[in-house]
Length: 634
Ligand code: AGP
Image (cartoon, rainbow, N blue to C red):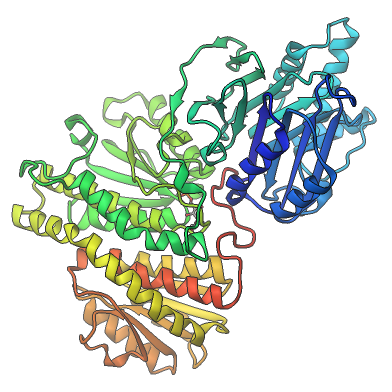
């Protein structure tokens, strides 16, 4: 949610900032802006240049190219609007009244109203509706105070002023500050919002996320919560929230190149759908290698103690990740026999269930940055620590695609889903990879607890090993099929998705995908619930997509589908060919596999149908309106 880039070094900052912002545009694309500071050896000595443009980054690029933005120090921002409409005056960077100091921020300053009122009483005039604008005014006020005390204007002064101001801010934020009086200084800070420093040769690039560093450096220093850093061409000074100087070794990033290219695909989303067979292959290689002992047939990075004594599991997640968690809960309960509950992370934060003993809390987030999920996990940990009972100790696991993200620093056990970077805002391959992680966990628990026979476990493993090849065929088949089906439904206004049991979450995911990228109203229901209300919506113009896979609820789902057909709804089946499928007006066929693994197949037609409907409607598939890839605000 909002992307920040900041750079200091010996090269022109603007091209580096624009390149970094391009890689972060998935975090928000309501407006974009940058500010550069010219260094003293340029004739227009020490001046701050600010360029902002409403809408996509391309508008800013055009502006910067035609008007120029010299200087080797700069900050940039791509915005997902929270406070104030998407208009140029609300675009970052925001400046103080003198226009000499600029700030970009990602997050929400919760006490901005009180701070704004206090500043207004002192005569400060605001130029935007944003929460962020209080920050440059506060820093400027602090700098004036320090200067009036006779302090020398230098980088340390700016650092001191920023540190004083962040101590007044409530909420979650990551920010970067430049001041034209110190063209050799960049100050950055973070609290509960991601920010990392990339170390180049004689230059530094800070960013909200690693893709911004592609082609710049692989050496990074992720900032910890509450830290403030001063970056100069000479080096980094890093301080914790108490003002203590921190010394940490940087870490090394892998696999940044594949981020940048769509290859021959029209959209990142389609490319990422096509990458799923490879995602599955990598998962099989990592977690189901041949030759593991029968007692532990899955390779996972956890000690035995991780599994011991767990009586129940609770999973916290949002959006698509929550749908993956729901499939996971079905597997953990029905296959491994562990009572499991899934919560919306945003609800859990404020209404958690009473504490239960010996509970594993799992946070699922592909980005590793979702504010609600991180806060819910932190709250759960804290209340268990306060309780101080050995049976109630916090036991946690984070399932994420970003092993370098905030969740990895917050939670003691991490399962990296290893899907590679996903650029399309609508999650596809990360959903599949999250599902696969739950299969690893379920198999691991089931074999250790002996809740399933060896034959059942081996049979599930053998089926999963075939997945990569089957997905390869399925993706191609449905890419072609969905083109035709999409033509039929491009003008549709409402769609109902039905599923039951392990495929109910896939109905929810199908509906979410369609809503997100095609802006068509869609709802997912457990098929048996349709007759309790939603059936009133059905008529000729409302397609019903019914997931009917052989298993415990197959016949039931078919009966529910018949009920829809009897109300004239157009009935589309996601089902194996030839198994009573004549009831469907159209079929999106999937292989006849065991019910346990059917979600890994049934989701593919959902993704491709949504994709092609959105493509037919000419929509911006990779950056759908109002959305952002990582939701770092509450
Ligand atoms: C997925 O298509 C959505 N963009 C959204 O629902 C997403 O799954 C949700 O915001 C959670 O994100 P996370 O996995 O990064 O936590």
